[in-house]
Amino acid sequence: MPLGHQLALHAIEIVVPIALYYRLRGAGVSNLLALTAGAAVPACVALVSLRISGRLGAVWALVLASFVVSIIASLIAHNPRFLLAKDGLITGVWGVWFLASLAARRPAAYLFARPLMEGRRVFAADDWDALWQSQPRFRQIWRISSVVWGGALLVDAALRVAMSYSLPIHTVPALAGLLWPVTFVVIQVVTNVYYHHAGLYRIIGARWLANPSST
Image (cartoon, rainbow, N blue to C red):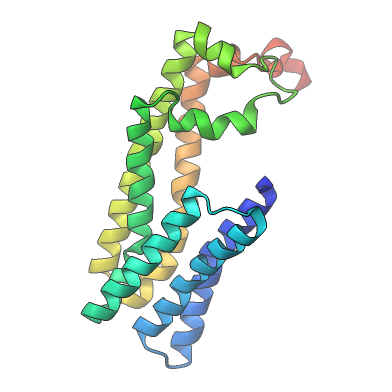
């Protein structure tokens, strides 16, 4: 699926459930039903992704699984806080995956960054496999980056679960929605500062380093 479509689907997944929740609550619908309706939106987005791409990726499979589990748990316990904590479960799984990928052939941060950076005109290096084989520093940078991402996502997950069980229910959806861009921006700033100091941009041949005046 094109990157633009993926970003649009993720935006819908975040914004629409929050708006739907507050709309339904304003109409007098209970917290449990309003949160259930909002939680169904990402599940529907996952089905749309399946329809477009012809397969259900790991991200959307996780979204569907968490939706089913949280709905069942909320209905059994009649407690909407299970639904509020759902996003923390998803984020926590991602954090664990980033850390577990350190034992894999390529760490998660490398796998995510490669399609976005390899072969772009602003970088001279166009073969990351060759860099991985020949540059120990290159390998170390992506492993450390994966630790940063994994740790940050686990902190995000812990905050989401804590908010879900400690704050008034009606405040959590908005705060949880705001936490997404905050977490993303913090991770991006931290990792890009690290990339600069660790020499990643030099390794991949950033053209603005060779010709600063061009920027």
